[in-house]
Image (cartoon, rainbow, N blue to C red):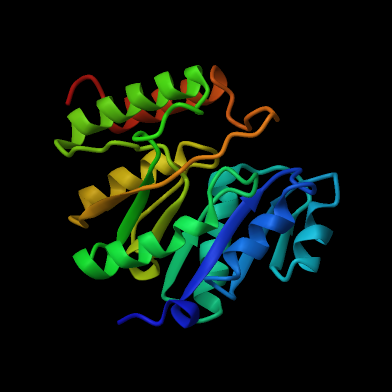
Length: 227
């Protein structure tokens, strides 16, 4: 049995989430005392709210992107002696109640990457996000010859040794796809667990146009037409 409270840290990248970050941290700390928030250039006091809620806070002076924030959080977790990291968003989309499912699946299967699967409960998902996620997941499933029901979910558990031994360069939301494909390419099995997704009234941080374009640019670079 893995002592998750001692061996796993939560990594929460966020940008301008002062009104929502504290409940997220409080919910996570019921399962994991170690919470690292990477405040990616917020201007609304997110860092102060995160610190008051009990998180270790790393602050960027400018917005550098989710991929950059996650990589910094992973490195800090390693310096602090953790072996696993649980990444989730700071906007309340991911429910801390689902955290034990990740731990159980990792222990049952020995997988070193476990990803949340929202696609069994898509009723609340905005239509454009549902369409984009399904399309990207189909493409990656085809290219990797692996069934990937939710390739874009940011709620995921990873073993730090495996994570830090692969080269990840994406600065923004493409990090989710790059991480997943890199684990598979390294021969690491990937597991999925069903989760709920909570969509509030605020706008998504994902831009359907620009982030989809970045994703296609990454995809084209990884699988050139000549291959």
